[in-house]
Image 1: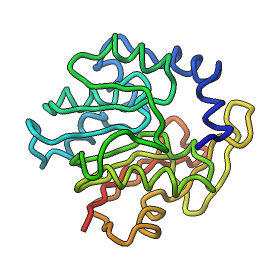
Image 2: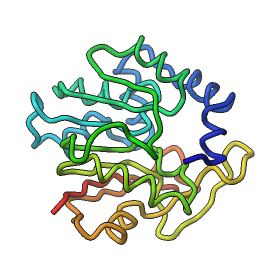
Image 3: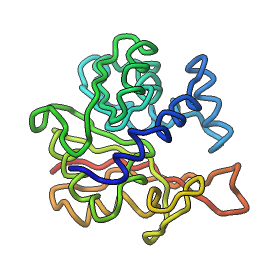
Image 4: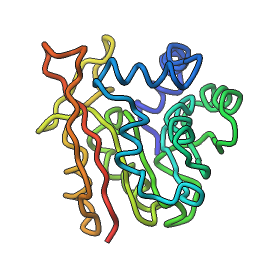
Amino acid sequence: MHTKQIDFWKGNFGKEYTDRSVYHSIEEWDRGYVEWYGIAKTVLNEDFLGFLDKENAKILEVGCNLGYQLQGLQAIGFKKLYGIELQEYAAEKARKIQQNINIIQGSGFDIPFKDAYFDVTFTNGVLIHIAPENLLAFTSEVVRCSKKYIWGLEYYNETLKEVNYRGNEGYLWKMDYAQFYLDNFSNLRLVKKELLPIKVQQEQGNVDCMFLLEKA
């Protein structure tokens, strides 16, 4: 599938985003979440996925950029970690930064793994950049590749709302993404859902949502 959002992220805007997103340590990355939500991302990861077999569970992040989300899972003991990243520049850079994490360049609209290959597939701030008319195609791939769980952390709003993104229109939306999955995939059930008010944006009332869904 070809979309204007793909061109946007594969171009200079995506490269600039990647260059802004470098951390010197996983501790620095984790502190950013404490400032954002008042809780470390590694703590949230453990809370949502800590029940899994960390030695053997295979986890795929769709839209991994530099791989810090995967490194955050590695920090709490997960071993079999994979990422797919649209932007070639970010994928190449991620492979230099991350150790013992399998990162490939490719599109979330056409994930090159067989059905139910992973125990968990997830996105972190990626669905928000998929145009609503293309969201079902993208999430269908996320669901297809998972044997058991779909996990996500995305901007939240009760209804679909477009947001101007650094002066650009047509590149950012917020909605109830957990409910989108449930409305469109009858074989999924909600395991857990947590709204996370953004501390540094309290005046705007912005909220993120972490959710875990299970395949029936």
